[in-house]
Length: 427
Image (tube, rainbow, N blue to C red; front, top):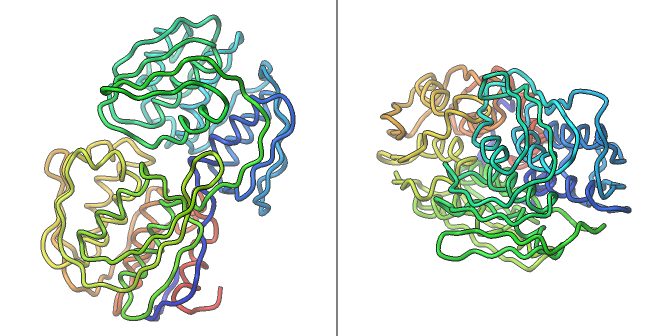
């Protein structure tokens, strides 16, 4: 990660395409008979995992290397895979594909890397089994598992947790299987799947805590531009806030209101962030975010906020480390089953760089200080931990060594170079 930081920020910067939307766009295109084009796609490791799985199921997808324009030729029904479907590190790939495969009359086996194999899958598969899919997980709540889809039954289900992945898997099962789905939500989560389903003619409605899908649509080829990922933008915005002078813009960012909760938390900490937005195709707001360095103060995050900021909590915790006073993040236990035990890693690594932090049940407590921050950070291969602490290490006098900086490529290729450009260093 970058060393020897400068403390002035300026210019206009862009972040890679939205990871959540890229996954979904590839999947929707693979289910549409004909040619689709997705511009601005994220070319990260997670997105490549989705593309690899879809190719194994019969879709034709151009390489996701450095080109962000992806051409997909889909088919109305996917074909029986000849190989195990390897989802890499991507929970989104695994869980959403389970929903899609539930509506297909063949068996598929899914697996992933060591981290993904530890992540819970029964939050999805229990509901899919209630719809009629047959699941064999070998008695484990995780991958590998085999799913055999078929004729599905309508589903009325109370979601056990607030999870966009679980919700999306069940909506996709209904859309592919041609059955109605009604989900009782504990909280509203990112709604990219609902927006894409609506654009394909499926009737999606939300009323009195229930999210309902009627199988009225069909998957059609499309062309779309993926906005910049707000979760990636959070790291650049945080780096700007922790600088000493200047002003900078992060352009072309997705501003879907189910994804921008972290901006409200930053504002409560003392940040002044100006957003300009315009409507993009498929109903996804997109715009620019402008901010400048700020003196930060401690913040309290309530449980109902957490589903909308779960990916940004590592970065917010590192901002809290530099803030004046104490910060409390309530109800963040879901961090334990992300790509790593993020709650434990946040606490461990904040302590390693000289910050008082502790987990109190499902709550996170951080006592901020002015710095500098020095120490070695253990990521367990978690991209968001790596990037959050790399940003904290940009403050004056700080020296943070991240043990696996390359894992940032899971969601933000060339992150270190982008951070350097923000601070006026050549890539």
